[in-house]
Image (cartoon, rainbow, N blue to C red):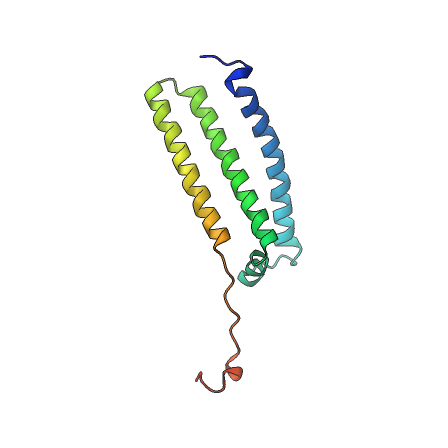
Length: 131
């Protein structure tokens, strides 16, 4: 099998290093925003407020997609390096792509489709409707 620069191996190697570095920076930013900017308090309301803005949805979606691509590209590299049977390689590559797409789509639908719940009025403002 050809393993020169034209085989895509150099791009895969370079992509894994760059995306790994970007993911480390994104993870550090994620931890700082989520755990340190709110004095360590993580509640549904805080996360919902953040996910209500398109900017944070875009940041989280980018983080998700880059993490999925990085992880599953790594799986593909392992399959290409260690699986020598063409049929098994074809099966595993198809499985990796399928699982990666399912995870990416489910995560994207969760992030994009998230709408914070409407605030609930306290019982005293409901005019005695709640006992």
